[in-house]
Length: 108
Image (cartoon, rainbow, N blue to C red):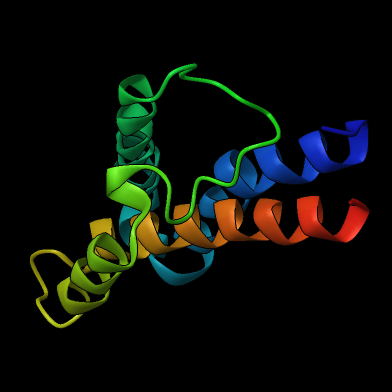
């Protein structure tokens, strides 16, 4: 992973959700940001892989919580007010990982 790609990856996982929380959930941005950060727990599915970390592996479609079925569930979660904020966090996470997959294919 290049230095630029690492910076973009971690900014999109940590910085961008803060911006989204502040811009769109101004009254509760700290709570929303915390929920966005907690959606990073979706990466616990990496522990099921061997090796559990491979910088040259695309997470999308490989790890169970990064599959099309899981992404479909995250999209359905948008329709319920009770699960909308975690759904947004999960989808931002998946989009970031998808960008990494695109980036990896670009430099190959």
